[in-house]
Every structure is written in C-alpha cells, then in structure tokens.
Image (cartoon, rainbow, N blue to C red; front, side, top):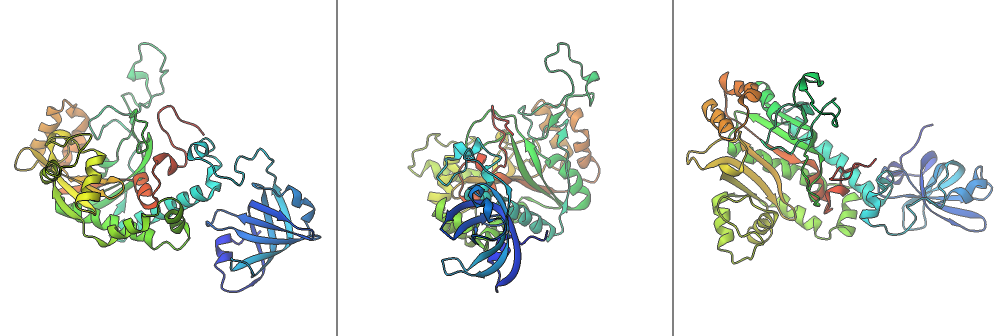
Length: 454
C-alpha cells in the first residue's frame, strides 16, 4: 500500500486523481446521502476532510467509524469549497480498527493531569502531537548545529561507576537481590558499585582531548526526590566538549547554539509553532524573537548579586554572595533588569563541581550559565580544570575517591590542554520553545517520584 501523508496531501499544489491516506477519525458528521470524516494521521496538526458518498465500497461500516477509529481512505484530492484548500472525495473506505464509546479522547477539553494518566494515547491530541513533532525537529536541529561545525557525536555510557557532579542522587544498577542481607559486590554483575549516569561529560572530555570537538546527546538520570514542574528522573542532555577552548569560547558557542535552536522554531512552517503561540503562550513568538535578535549580555556572578541587592526587588530568597541562584533570581535578571538573555559567569567555587577551572582569585571558577526570559537557566557550562595538581586538590577537598578518577586525571597527566563545554537539558529547551510549563508534558513517558507508568 502506497500511502500519502496528510501533510503532503494538504501541501499539494494541484488536485490528485488517486491517493490513499490512513489515520484516525477525529470527528464524523452524517447527512442523508453522505458523511464527512475528519482524518488525522499524526504527520501534521491539521486533519483532512473526507467526503464519503453513500454507496461507495466500505460505506456500510460508516456508523462504526467513530472518533478514535482507524480508517484507510482511497479517493481523489479535490479543491474544497470550505475553509480548507483541499479535501478528499472518497471512492473507497476501509475500517481498520474500531474505537468504542470507552475511547477516552472524545471531542472535548482534557486536563494535562488526565492526559498524563493516558500517556499512551495523548500523542493523538493536537497539543501533544505538536509537542512531540517539535521535539523531533529540535533533535534534528541539535545534530545539524554540531555536525555543520565538525563536532563528532559520541555515545557515552548509560551505566557508570563515576559521579560527574560529586553528589549522591544516583540510581544504583545491580543484579543482586535488593532485599537480601550481606550483599557483596563480588557477586554483582560489574563487581563494583554501578549507577545510571547523571552526565556524559567526563567521558566526553576524554574524546574531546583526542578528537577536538565532540558532543553527546542521550538520556541521563537523577534520583532527586523533587516533584516540581521542572524536574524528572529521566531526561535527555546535550553536552558538547571543545578542546583548546576557554570560557569565552564556551560562552560564544552556547549563545550561537541557542540562537540556532530558537531560529529553527521561528522558521517552523508546519503549523505547530502557530498552535503554541495561539493556545499555549500568546507571548511566545515575541519572546523567542527577542532571544534571536538580542545580543546575550555577559554579567559576572558578583555583578549579578550586586544588581539584585540594589534593585529594591523583594525575593523569597534574598540574594547574597555565595548562594546558588534560584529561578526567581534568574528570571528577575532576564525579564526585569536586562530584559533579554544573560550569561552569568565566574561563580563561587563552593557551589560548583570539582572539575571547573579555578580562577586566579582563588574564590571563583570559570563557570557560566545561560539564562533566558520565561524559563531562567537553560545552559550550564564551564572551562574545565586542566591543571593536574589543582584537580587532584579539588577531588581530595570534596572527599571523593581519587582512584575512581584516575582515567580522568590522566587527561591532565598526558598532554593536557585547555578545554570547555556545557550542558543543555533537552526537555528544558522544548519547554522554552513551546511555552509548555511542565516537564511532564514534553516527555513521552515521564519518570518522576512515585511514577513509572507505561
């Protein structure tokens, strides 16, 4: 069966004498001698209208072609007298699968909470179909940005014995009975403690120190018991690493990357972006256009704290030097003070991981965060510490096991070079470019505390 996608049928420049489309019925209206079907196949936001005259093959099943049923339509693509440009004059209908009255996506509004409970069906709705098509387009844009700049895509491991962030919020991987007493790692699959990765950065650095510029793009995991609209236990990260690169080069690349992704969304002609602007966030287009057009401000962490302290703004968490900035601080800087994207750099060393390069002042590290209006932090990165003695001192100071990082230290022992990189949470990006406010709604099957359905 050669099938024509609905998006291609609706984009046709001329009538088509014969074509076949297949999809799911959104609505059906019956008249005495014919019926109207709205059929959507997921290829685009729009549905195609089908006019089926009584008496054509398959019309005897028209009563069972209710909302949610799957059908195949053969017919002619003809000009429509209605609002749409084209419609299909059916010559044959085939009922592929029925959807009884228990089908939960009847033609009415449904809350996001309800739709999360039927995540296996929610991609059939307008909103979630648009979200996940956008997710696919954004993934392609990520690869296009890096491959056009001669970055090498590296697949870093999902199972690791190293903790990139020096924290304990990791999922353990074991073949041992978790309920058994006296567990010994000698009997475990890897013979040592193993976890799901929180980042591919450390392994990515090893390849950057051989291939030059690389990027990773894959799933990561955090066992953080946080039930907010911004956190999930399983999410995807994009992490480029660049050899012979300092903090300034890192910031320049991060800014270019965000501009590229935002412009990709602004250039979308599928109808999905227009849908988000109309039904999700009416300020979305203006906000994204401002990011695309406005130079990113560079502001040191110290300057940012002083700006907030002198602003007169009342914060839930009063700003002070040495604090880890909260979302309210990030959004104040981007939405009220600078009124545009900001890159904050040179953070206190105490609030950043061990691998970030220590500045000459001994108090700050070459870290940077890209902040954008509407969401706050969207990228975090740094120049990495390339000096072996300083890196080993950081590991010891934080009480980490040096033996676990011998291979990471070897990068500094054998031909060390300045290098830098950053991380972008893919779901945070999708929220930014769609205006969707909850991370659970941009993940196909969200994994959050007490939730591992489907």
